[in-house]
Length: 111
Image (cartoon, rainbow, N blue to C red; front, top):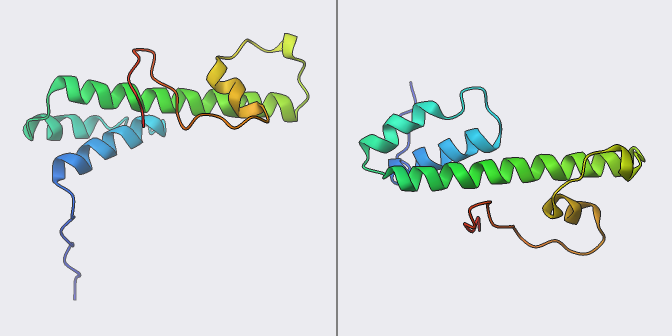
């Protein structure tokens, strides 16, 4: 007997927005493009979609910078040999606790 899909406790537009952002943040090859039409169909504005994309890209980029910095530290690559990284990435290599998140380049909060 085939199991019927359970109804999500989230509205389909929220699921689509989360899936879009997750695909972008994870560098998924499909990039979440299939979610765009769904979001537009549900009446999500281009501004709201753009904000989700901006935040997802910011989180993806910040994670990559922090990983690069921690690799450089672990590999003992001299600071002068690698490119300067933004302050958000440097926070990952320091002993001081980093902020929960940093704002996007446009100044939007991501948490």
